[in-house]
Image (cartoon, rainbow, N blue to C red):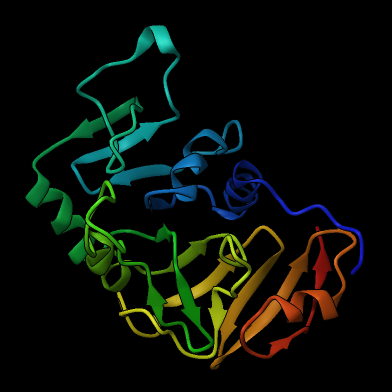
Length: 220
């Protein structure tokens, strides 16, 4: 196997933040996506939304500046940007269901080659049991990107031909950012756009549960 260093969770979030354009309204899911709030490039206006009722939140606060009442959907403390607001839960979901968000970044247990998403919580011990707001986000947002490790802890691929887990939504995922690669979901196939330095195509393919295409590929 070739020598390479997988990205950390923070590095995955930072890589995604680079690709979010100026002025987009973006929802960040639980897990790796929440770290994106801390990685938005300086000077770029990205309006962050949380389904519990915040629009315009910012990065995590310093420990001595925590507002215990200001949290995101993952129950993590956040800050409020100038011009930001908070409102009723129902109004927040009206934003989602009304198609007003440009992007949602979600975690995933599995993504299929045709963009099916499986990211339900898997046990009653999870902090956000069952499907949560992801079902609304996956179908109500203009674009869905996924942030995840490329495989499970025991090495099973998360990018598969078809999902074994119950689906959150069908055919919604447009791009996947993993600790190994950036992959577009295009016409029922995974197209690799970028890989971490030192990783070979063969090694990436071995860690993926379906065939990869390598068109217009770049190295990070």
